[in-house]
Image (cartoon, rainbow, N blue to C red):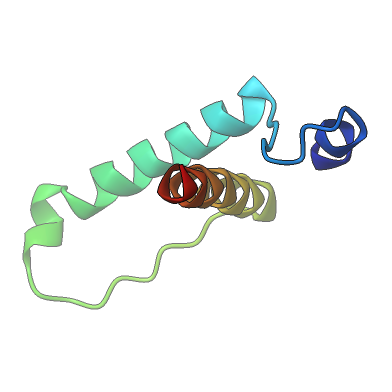
Length: 75
């Protein structure tokens, strides 16, 4: 999708599908639920794993948020 934005001379924007945002939101919600679960209150080291496609969605959304933050800083 980034290539499409660049082709439209819209390189300052990074376009993601709605599905990418939904996947990232579900992952964040699931992690939040696991971290805030009652048994998670005890001191411990937790290792959370996610499938590659979920991790990819998280990274893509993070990149969009960073670009938006950086763009706002330039304005």
